[in-house]
Image (cartoon, rainbow, N blue to C red):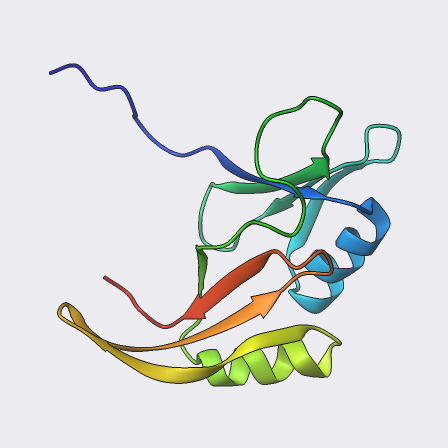
Length: 129
């Protein structure tokens, strides 16, 4: 069977306020900002230790995709999610689920959940598999 997916270039999240999103992703999460196009309300951040980009923009009328505040399930990695969530909170971020040990059939790890200013939620986990 021919490949239809050969990699991942970027993850895009819709936002409602580009400047507010810039402060969160740059100052709270500490991501490296690669682009902020004010006229297009578009931002691009580098994700550490990966070539994958995190992009965001204000959703245009009739544009498909998830509305701001409805994204969930993206998993950020950190060796100590409890420490990461403490630092995110200290920087003004929101923790929606406190870090806790999770045991599954494939292993045991720590997972917490954070939210951006629109309410998009991201997992912070030390899971490596």
